[in-house]
Image 1 (cartoon, one colour):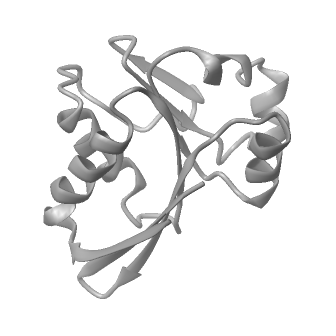
Image 2 (cartoon, rainbow, N blue to C red):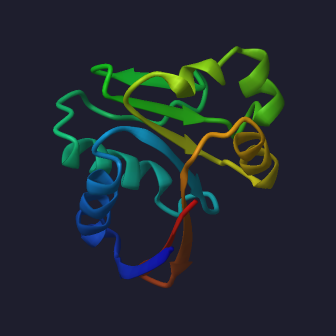
Image 3 (tube, rainbow, N blue to C red):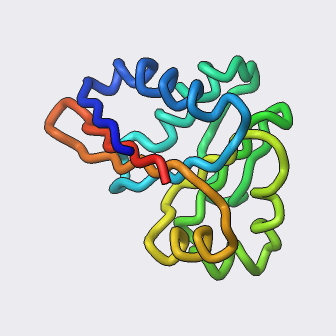
Length: 138
């Protein structure tokens, strides 16, 4: 199933609420988009929708941030799939909570499917002063 949303970046809370409802029992959310497309902004809005009080920032250099054992935020831009696996983070995805992974690519998707993990994919496209979110429930 697919859903699409187009809104100004300030309207991301509505998208985050839809995702939070879909992930109310936990799960994996993959974010795909160019630099500055709003991946971390969407993650911050999702944290708010999940009632996470801790401030959310991009885990670019730490690879993973844990917020209140509710939200796990990964940024694999620097390390890619190999770095993610090398650091033993695959097992982390089986822990309860919401796992948001920025920069997931087709190799990452194939790996998740290969180990039988379900996920939601959000592709973010920049449209002048708006963002288009294509949400695929896999």
